[in-house]
View 1 (cartoon, rainbow, N blue to C red):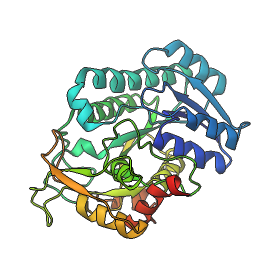
View 2: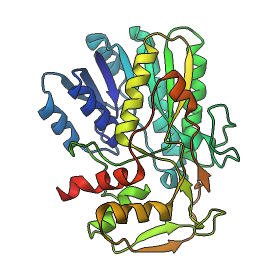
View 3: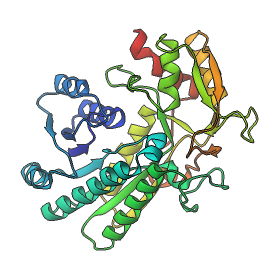
View 4: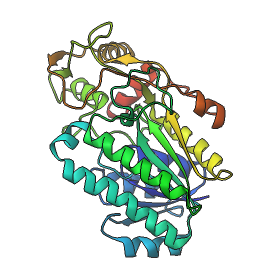
Length: 330
């Protein structure tokens, strides 16, 4: 299968492309390197130079080049990962997030329509649910994002749902919970530099001696240990969810959403303890005030993905913690 991947140099897009290449698919990759790693492109070329083709494009500014690429390559499906993704950064730079995330998605869909490309998998986020009182969260839950990042994701989902009604593109939105860990081949992994905002790369930085302590933002939540709870999913399980979505979208019409998570909440402190156990080391931490946009508890009801995608997770939290550190140790 020929797959066009936006955001192919990123952690999730790069891991998806890597696994797809291993399975024999052809990948047409796009990235503008606004928040991704150029070295991932070299790794993908090295893996399958005859199956991986890359173009440096900004989706929101290079529509003519994008149309030409789509017409030339005619991919069977587009997987859209490209996005600015930091909750805290989005609160400080809302205009940048709206312009990048929404406009790039509109430009991509316009180009797909122009070229007759009919299948799209969109990388959405559990942040669309905001501080939901429903836990675990079903896809039908109220959408009430508490951050600019989450607002851009739900705006894109509304846009895609409306476009699907025209019967020109069939779309699946995958609402990720908290991807972490790394592919077992230790080739593509999450960047721990450039002031990461997600929890796991910050824990890895402490494990590697780059930071002395990890900052825990909030210890006054109404949870068992006072720290926020999230649904962490191994990157390999997440990628497998995309593979299942691609299989489903071949035969579906319209628009569908699926949660991708484990269905189990893990607190910040629980993740740190699991990391210490998995890697046989000590992680120092300090408490700081809550960050704007963060929510108390967020974990998935994944029954829809299990039923309709025939997908389930395989990796536990200790495996995620071991695999998050292993590319830097071995």
